[in-house]
Image 1 (cartoon, one colour):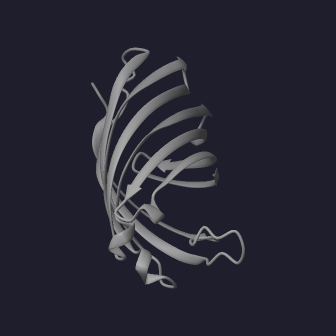
Image 2: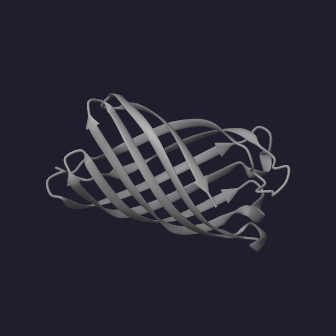
Image 3: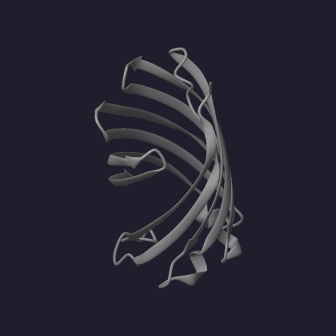
Length: 169
């Protein structure tokens, strides 16, 4: 049977350059909440389709103009290379409404993920993502390439924690 179900989560963090300025970027802490439905790889064959639909909202206490709500749809393909080693290619489409409406956008792109579960509850993941975001005002439109890595621990079937790093350009 396919693994599918509802997910919910929250994330707190800090972005050091929200204005994307070359000099003196403005940073802020943030809090985001998300929820959605995911149909993951079933594990019954090496290749399987996946699907996700998420809604998210974020609050930036230092810069209220960038508070947002978004919805993302992401069908994909996942492949099991070896037990505990998977890869996935996931195109996505996202609509985003930002408090400063000039920054509201429609984005599309693709994400490539690799996940290793060496045994036990710990896991390691790496990813590359390309995003083409078309904002209401062209000044806020962008194309981005991002790479990242994360280390996670699954504490129970329904609860996990992760720490990671992302570099984008």
